[in-house]
Image (cartoon, rainbow, N blue to C red):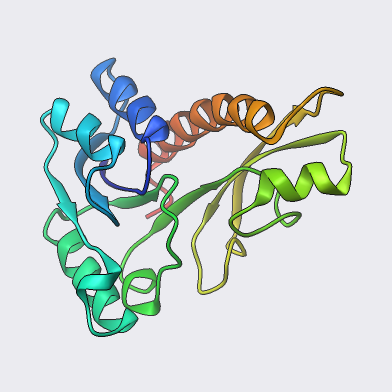
Length: 188
């Protein structure tokens, strides 16, 4: 299964996919797209010999133009699945309608959607949160849920400490979901 992975930051989910692929998982990262220059995720991809493209929103006259360009860049790599792995941009219909896009989110959706799932879960006082893997649709974190993993909130957790534990669960979940999809093939 061919994957294009979209990143905005450190690329820890990307690294989990690269490592799994190198260890024989039934998927290959064929390209990585970033929404800004200089991301660690893009550096990780280059270090693994994976082509990288950058599509910065400020470089376009409109968000629709950015989405059209992103869709063209992704399509060049003929992915079976696009993975939004910490990609901090809402994708428009130009992208969402063109590809099967899998996203990870650091909360148990439908609770705490959006950019601050960990912070919002802590503020709400939950004792269990976690991560979700879902298909991307036109909404924000509203697509069909594929898998979820629970993570207990500890009494002394900060947003950073809780997010780090969620990321561990998120990486394992993402690799397992993509492996199952690649082996099943009924998802097509």
